[in-house]
Length: 261
Image (cartoon, rainbow, N blue to C red):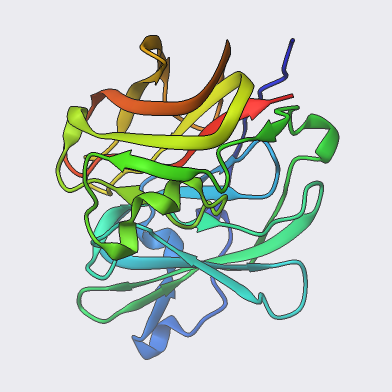
């Protein structure tokens, strides 16, 4: 069976418009002043989530507020374990988006010296449903976690990798390439594609590059980790996802996926 897997990337010109805040007061400055390059928006193929990727010239705690109109209504920050402290590489994930819809957003951040940076209001449009890609049903959502290499804490438990929520994640406790998670689908099912949405830290660690899937002693892969699933063809119930290569550290997954469709 053929599937259409696609990813949409949009470069955003945050520094192209002046911020309408009061820089003269010394409390609010233009966010564009600390942007290294124009931010990039990486859309999930479903059109329901988007990760805003931006680097700053100084350490800051950053967030993006977003919404369809009027008051923004939503806010996203880094899911990095160290998001409470300033850093320079930021990846806030916006969730709950509607496909084919225009959103307003604003970037803002607080530097270590207390200075607040804020961008003007910009817009982006999510991919429409007919270009989002046909994955079928993700059988892993709600699956039983039968085994896991380790968990960093209760907030980063293995169940987060099968809850269907892209704003949560499972993190191992420093397992690096030895991280694994085993899930039980509850019955024998035909699987046509698998995915491993890697978590990552702002310092570049904890990023899974490739993974394998073990089913009844057979090993499939390695496959590239990320938001684009890889096609397979097997029938199984208990699936073990293993990190094959990574940047080390607290590796884990936002979601592990097993599609049928």
